[in-house]
Image (cartoon, rainbow, N blue to C red; front, top):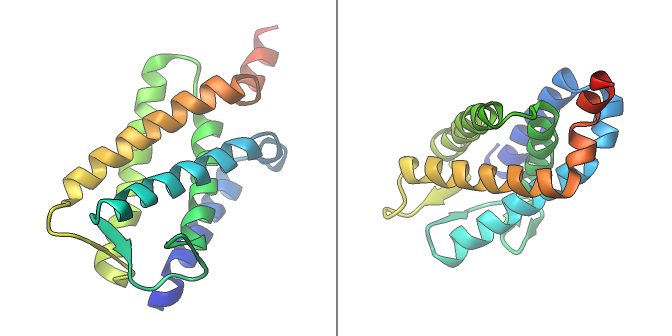
Length: 159
């Protein structure tokens, strides 16, 4: 179970995407999924490099990051991008809700499945703050790089 825990969480995340986001919209937002996976990969490289968090057992690790984490990041990227509104307040709300979901998955992963470990110098609160910062950076980059793809439905409905 521990060995495949990140794949189970990735499958749950993708089921959430398939439940909330229409297939044509998933096709439009795939670059946001790639960006989401890249942000998750960079975050884990940072945590591992600082010896703050690491995986004990991971399925098909890439530089120590299990492939399931990257699949989860891709699903999260599409999910967040699909829900992003044009107004700033809505983006903050989505970042907060996504942070809570991400932190919940992280808590389950760490405390139930025991597939990754935090050092004693890295608390769950600090992990939540890092999740919020990384989600904010994701939103900033996604808006800058893929604004037309993300807000295509708003542009069509405004005309």
